[in-house]
Image (cartoon, rainbow, N blue to C red; front, side):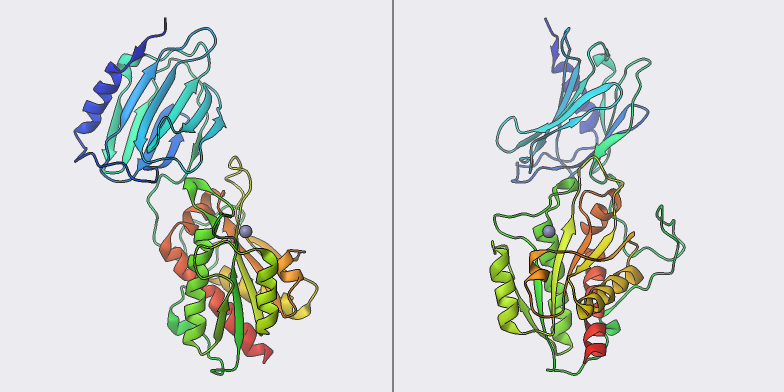
Length: 365
Ligand SMILES: [Zn+2]
């Protein structure tokens, strides 16, 4: 009969409780922000500050390996299974009951943990460590989300550069960087992608595309308006808007430029895929607009350059003015996801997009 042990959990909770201040009532969202298993078999967790965790151990049988699970306050955004690597057969993020997120680490059958050695230790007010005591087990790194606290953005020139990208000096922007254009002379339609029932991409840490792009679009709108540009938004809150009404609104508004703002996603198993890409459709002015935004972003924040390209997205294909669609970065990318979740980074992105649009308007007319 499998040995189901809560004793160990009590032991861990005690070990962890030394650094815990208080348990808090469950809130709507999961307090698990990020997890990682490293090559030394250490599970690291980042959570909301000052929470209490419950951890459990269940001995495996012939069919299934040992399991360790930890419960966090708050429901997961998306229950999911992640195929394991090495000694880990599978990791699951589930909801055993409403308001609880359960992280389950299931080991390969035959991998034997020593529950007496399991200790979940609070190492900081929002960080935890648990070493899996298995002799001669092979661990391969895996995880979701960003364990390190968000760093201030943009990074200073000369800081470690990202792979596949030359070092270059970045130019942090302020509102004083916004170029002058003739007041009252231009109109721009901004199109924050998705919204309402359509969250768009959901990335590392549960970040939703619809939230990121609305925040950025609103900031871009404020910057443009501060320079006397009239701005029309296809949505200004979390509502569902189909694509045809977006294009119709743009065509009716007869703007000088249309800019659709999105964030990219690819499989959660491809955290190495990061970067900025900006699109236009069959128009030289559209290409100029796309390039102006794209290059302004690359001058401002550190981002892999995936290029300015032609594409057939509905909102740039069915709009009758210079139009561009920018994919700010990959919500599933390790680098971009951390940046896009960072309000300071989003402020820089918004300034960079506004500068790109204003430069385009200035040169276009
Ligand atoms: Zn999108």
